[in-house]
Structures are given as structure tokens and as C-alpha cells.
Image 1 (spheres, rainbow, N blue to C red):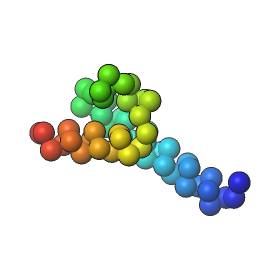
Image 2: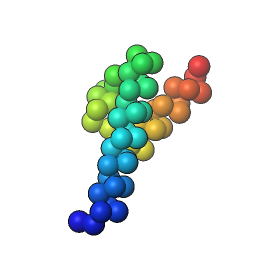
Image 3: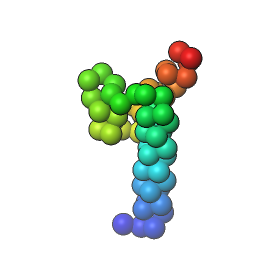
Image 4: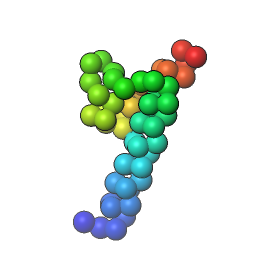
Length: 55
């Protein structure tokens, strides 16, 4: 695999971990009966945005 691909994967994983931390800080551990740790980046981003809209 190329260096660029590895950097993109690392960047996406880092973004995912940041969103998970923000959701945990809001008290959210699940979405649709699924652990937030099992969700993909785009679903996590959606959950975070929806929670921010609610507040």
C-alpha cells in the first residue's frame, strides 16, 4: 500500500476517534442499538450532527 493511502486511513481513524470522544462526552454510547465503536465514520458524523441540532 502507498504512503498516501496509509495517511488517509490514519486520518480517517483519528477523525473517527475524535467523534467517538465527543459522543461519549455527550453521554451517547449507542445508536440504533449498536455501539458507537462499531459504527463507520459517516454514521458517527451523522449522529454527532443530529445531537448538536437537538441541543
